[in-house]
Length: 164
Image 1 (cartoon, rainbow, N blue to C red):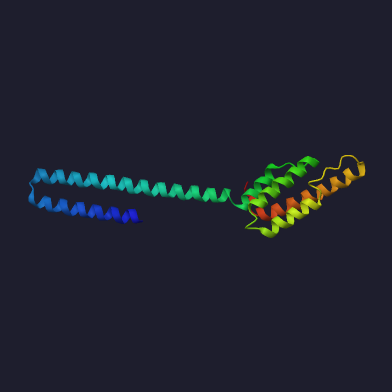
Image 2: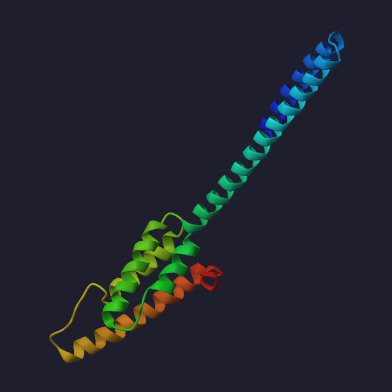
């Protein structure tokens, strides 16, 4: 808007000077001055249009960047791109979810803290391979943890989960 005001002021000043000079000049000189005015108006119109286009593109890019940085988008991306079939997949899914939640812990401090505590209590940091029963219980705990984390991310993703 500021560019438009400045441009209109410049065009008005130039038009005033040219109209003053046209009163003093002959017919051939008047035609040259009219051509100058038309040329200046065209150039100015081009720059105003270009400036408005660049601003619109910049605003669109800023909107896209803010969307990419949003917790909703990040949650939806983790849900979409993280497999949860094996115990290793579930562990990785929980780590990825915790890393994303830690990134947004200033915005969602309770969600991050609860998810962190639940992941630890689910045994995401422990790997019980020696005893068959412990491994079975750990698998169930990891399954519960991954399902809870998935539900949390779905809640955070909201409508973004359906868009990606």
